[in-house]
Length: 605
Ligand SMILES: Nc1ncnc2c1ncn2[C@@H]1O[C@H](COP(=O)(O)OP(=O)(O)OP(=O)(O)O)[C@@H](O)[C@H]1O
Image 1 (cartoon, rainbow, N blue to C red):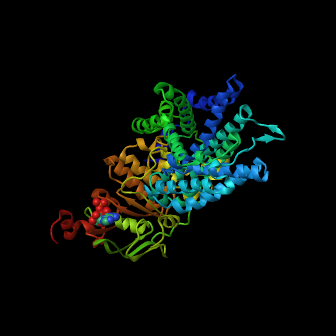
Image 2: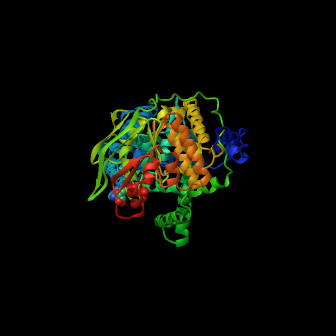
Image 3: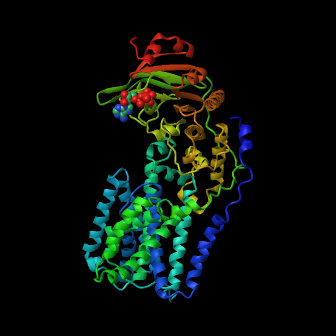
């Protein structure tokens, strides 16, 4: 746990990235560039153009559904907005397609912001159902408006041209399509590897942990919903000028399901899975359309039946998609350590030693008929560790959740550094300098330990998604990562920076949560059972860390069942039983109390 000791464990010279990972991306790019130069028949170039056009909305779904866990069946409708905007404006008003691209993007962005603003507060199965509802509405809108040609659509859309030079439907068009796909993929990769990206990746696990780290989860959800829609809109623009006609059917719910299928098949959380998924589905669809009637002997949409069966098989046997299959086989490349000389992040002004930091005044929480927390009061001064103990079900975690804003209290007041914080959201409370860990560890298992901990420093950075995509967030990013490494070293995990968090043992996961909470530079730290799952030595080390924190002026509220640890490190202990305040005092007073002994033994007192 000694910082110097941990530092020495950190590999200062990073492993050399594997050749496959290093050259994989340039090789893919080279292949994409080389394909139109090869003597491929035009049919195949056209197919590749369609694959690229499908890959764009699927990229959006990778972000929205694969990474953030927000299922949308409505992506095809946004493709439709892009396609119809350019078709209508170029055919009826003679506007340049290079202008209609941006008009389409603006229209799609506004529609997505409005639709997302209404639907993204829903969770569980309500969200996918809502996306189906508006996807159907947009489809019927396209099919019923006279100006848009009803179900016949708009004919005679021109191809793209630059200074009179027609881009056609083949090789030159291919360059435009695949440049846009590569730009989209690059933007997403950059976004995911950033402050905003970590926040987005935390969304899939529910909003509680992300909000406690100060992430505005709703804003991030609407943001990625709009971004996904914009990628779809670009796809629609390309589609209209390749196809030269638009009608509602490619933008209906069936296509919405197909985009989702491409996403899952490719590997929902992998950016490159979008291209794999779009490619496999498009090629299979075409091949099945030709082969099946020959095999069966009659014409018909048999490919849809085969597709249905395939979806079920993929969901059953390859739930992480084709790309994860590839990705697992590629050796991991640890991220280059480039943050060690970054400037330290500014820190907040800490309360003076002995100042009252937290005052809990008669807080109460009633669940139906159960009074889970019954008029509990206590306070914490700067530099104190206060233990909150009691038998199972005493109301400790509920008290924790009332202080941190996860639950609304029924009555009472909570003041932090003199300010009433009862009624504020957990994000607002986090902003004021209250940081926490969870009884059941909440982390992003497929992010590295370093990235998970850097999420704790979210409020100490300001750069957003656009800065990340343009890569102008790097100086700040280095500061955040430097802080994350510093806190990991503090809890003795400096040699696990690049490990996937999901691979950690339970004790290490708890230490990760403490490092993440410390990254927020809190004045008050709330730890919910931090020693659960820790071995004896780890508990001793944890006690040392907590003591060193209080020596720096940090205040700690500790919920813990390990009485040895509680008695060893707490300055003051509050004992709860059946939601009520049983007693409080020094560890010695609590240990000698017959009431406390009776509460733990379950006898009358
Ligand atoms: N969301 C909820 N709805 C209804 N009852 C709840 C809810 N959360 C907690 N309770 C009840 O409130 C009481 C206090 O629970 P709480 O989890 O706060 O206890 P605890 O002291 O943290 O217990 P443990 O040590 O087992 O974690 C329990 O009876 C529990 O069943």
